Length: 347
Image 1 (cartoon, helix red, strand yellow):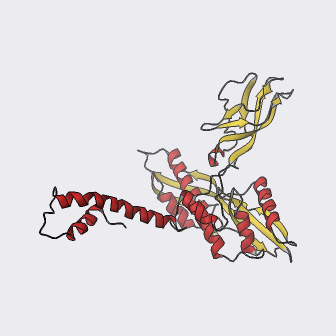
Image 2 (image 1 turned 90 degrees about the vertical axis):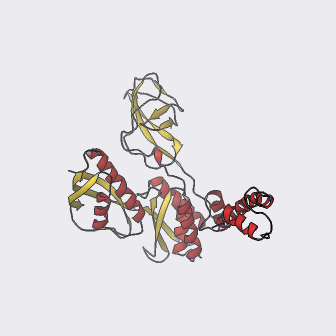
Image 3 (image 1 turned 90 degrees about the horizontal axis):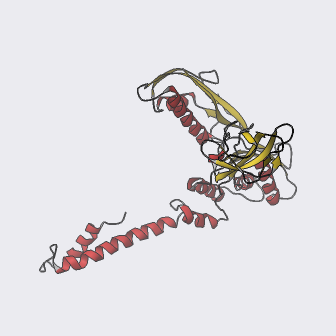
């Protein structure tokens, strides 16, 4: 840590003979104080430059520059895409560029269609914002931001979950360490893992060499939201690996199977400050974040850890009768599975 202005200034004054006046307001005091101020700034700048020179401490664009030395680039955020069903009068026109929305974000319609005799049409939409903010459950998209002639209703019959946040500094740093600390050469399993993780939207990957005999490799992936990958992401990973793999290898890319973690628990809550709905949401958020943290890292969901997360959630005073998937024990996670939060039931 750089010395402060006062420490630097005191050190400068100590090098001046005591026969001279060095008190505040004197010539020597006033002449050296501005220098001390500039020296403190220079020392801090030196510390920042040093931090920017190492992957462990670099951030933002400086981290981008450091990892680029190993051929890595930060994975960008992507926009969520999916389909909505629009109802209206026969002959009504849906124009590409029209907008639909959920409670927080808008989506742009990507294709033009005319409502036929079924009085409905399915059209592809893209979220106007990058990242996971565009991921929504079934029937979350339900508004027209402005009235569209002849169109009366909109809804998404399937969830939309392929919007991915950009790679964070910590995620990029970890991918850098994965590359430099594991011997990825000649198409070994580390190479396949690195190739898979280079694809935007991939959160992690596992590699199973010889899974179906000599010359076969299986790559199992999860997305950046630490859930199962959709078919498009699986295809993107497969194509990227095919461009890089050695000749002769037969590659299979699959999504991890989602293991639903259902929670049943009896709560004592701080009803003066929280509703049961708020407490439930706090518990869901805490468990979801924990499951993301252990995705592809742990082989079980800890019963004790889930209990701790519940007890430490805002609004919870105590809990009892905790069941995870109808049992009061740890839940095993298979090598090709990723644990995701299912239904939380609180009473």
